Length: 351
Image (cartoon, rainbow, N blue to C red; front, side, top):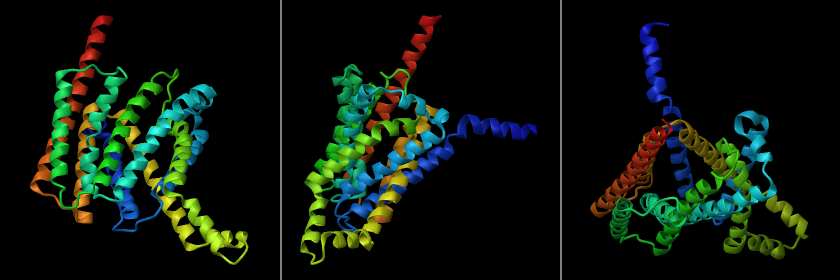
């Protein structure tokens, strides 16, 4: 190998090795955003049971995580998962699965009513709730810097909402705001509980295998109580002249059922690919890469909303969006510098 090739390989390994996963994260996240808005949006396909369809996505994630960890136990951490006691398994799976279910479920319900652009801008407020939850759980100390970040992001959210006055949906806004809260609680709770495990779950698929059963259960329960898909099934059976088993057979073999299953499998596949790329970056890339990548991904999603769905942006929207992203960047930069400072202090104590 020539010196030029060695230099190029060295540069790639040091600075660009994360690019395939980053591009995959952008691509699958974009596909999933378009998919969710197209399928759930009331001005598009308007699928009547978004929570039930999301439970199928979770079932696909559970199935994939079990298959991969069983086929490659050493690589993906099957032994750590099966060594968990039922107490430890339920202690992690139930609370983390519940808040994950509420985060994603409310997000998909919000997309029924609001634009993808507005959804992305409001969901960018998640760091506020991460900070609040971190304060409550004792993971962060209150400081004027963090309070400044909360004020900046809150101001940006206020401007974003003001700019959405024409097509503003209060229900959609409250749903995505609730999703942002549960997203902040989700990441704080996952970090708090998973860090207590000895040994830790080593890969994204091992974490997915632990959390997915509760996610499926809680999402199905939410769908049953809120959307009540079972009522539609029972009404069709009751209205039919044929015996109930003949009507049920017709429903199972109907185009609607196969379309639902196809949408579920397709969305589940996109979600698995996105989560895999995301966790690969978390394990391999630096905090700065993740910080910039996360903001760029959200900006790319807004670009898709404007170009693909024709979402409108006005001056107030853009000012609010810029303010929110400035606050998010400030928060992530402060978090990175704080972790770096703590690491240097720890190394000095060892010396």
